Image (cartoon, rainbow, N blue to C red; front, side, top):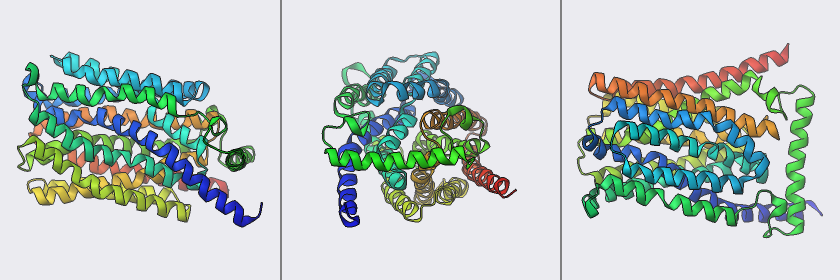
Length: 440
């Protein structure tokens, strides 16, 4: 086959992969993001109903990540053995039932238990999705595909903010339930159905897909095998790549990448948990209006996210694209110290924080697969996500404590601003140290 024919086949193949895989993955991730982030809207109502403090809310919000982190690596290693279809079925059915169960909580203890169980149920979902993408999409196209998949995050906020606000505002008192109880049920149960649908529609590997031709399967497999062989060759030559999880776990670079993951995972959780409160504190009392305004930063950020990812793929550069974007998010958080009392200025600051956060996601989550393959990819991605989750467990608890003590969210703005700056710097430092060692 000549080069022109190869290019035509490659273009047609990757367009088909995008159309076949992205809609399913994006719907799954939209539901995932919605079921973990809607707590930030619900708190505006249930905290008064349950008599909950900001510190208690922060502790429960963090417990999600404790459960998530504890089961992340085992879940992802199991996915590598049993496949994404069975894993998605297990995870999505369990988290959908847990998410709907929040409608029944009556005490702080119920809230703590349900957040912990929701985290356990969701463990392995995100790194599992990244592993699945690595089994289907060649590395040089992965940032764009990953960013398109992760566009589900801003889409979930665009959908979830107005939806949550409408349910909280419009269904309060229906059937004797509070609006927040209806919100958890209406937004939680669809995940159960989608888990079953994903099991039916997805295939674990390209070789199993009935919608790929034999020629397309051979071409895609040759691309993926060539990349895996290159990674394995670098690992054998001591070039910083790994095929086994044990070797990856001893690589300091993985932990410098994990430092960046802590910033992104915790910073993203911070936006989920506190953005509705920032908007309300800026003078918006109507919960429907809070939900609508919360979608605006994500509407802009989804464009930024795709542009950064495409540029990262064109340049074949990941670290600086991710680090610069994350530090921009940190600047947005810090600027809220001076803008949070003005709704227009607060919205600008929030938009900068969201754009920076989402802009970093595509390049960053495409980075680990450059150095990891096979079991190293399954365990390494889970290890990075696990450490990111540990930071997210501590962050809401710290922020909730300072919010109760200070009576405002200034502590949150400083905390997340510094976090979104420190993580990228540590990642860049780890990469620099590795390059210096190679020169010795």
